[in-house]
Image (cartoon, rainbow over all chains, first blue to last red; front, side):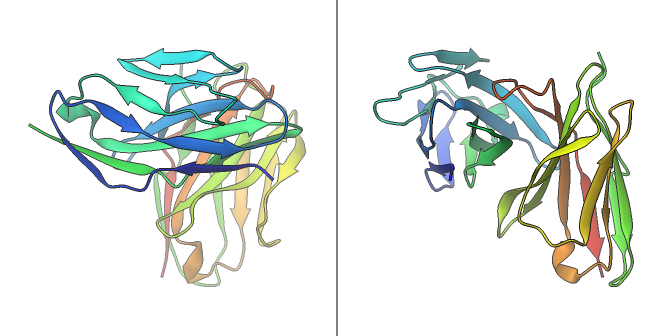
Length: 112
Length: 113
């Protein structure tokens, strides 16, 4: 079945530092890949997506590239802000199954 | 455009009771999915409905059920509540294709005492 593995947290950075959160996946066929963000006490917000190999999703300074050869979809941001502090989830949806399969989430804390 | 609306936001129930949660999807979206989020198990898929038909189901006991109405609004029901059912229940709506984005509501926080 489908699965997503993302780096264990928590991740603590200083403001303006570079962020990478690793995500790798296992799936049959060509899944769509997503990053979601969850702020305390809220639901999940879609951050970015990519639907085919070599696609780059981007939003609010965050980027992730769909790498089929390494089955990866790492999240990056060049300069994080305190307001980026949240839990980040990597997810995939693919094959004949319409459900989203999530990683365990990575807690990011950005200090001023 | 209104987002996904879940009601109520918070619930406290007693073991053995039943509960019904409601989800109104984004206008035009025909797919509604439900997820359970707990600190131990993370985000787990419950079921997905598309045009009033259950299209996918996760590995949850039969106490968890759902339905979707002709206006795409969905409800999920949990009967005979257990302490372990305490969780954040999230609803997501989408257009329904495999490659389409899913948009989540703010969730219903269920506490079973």
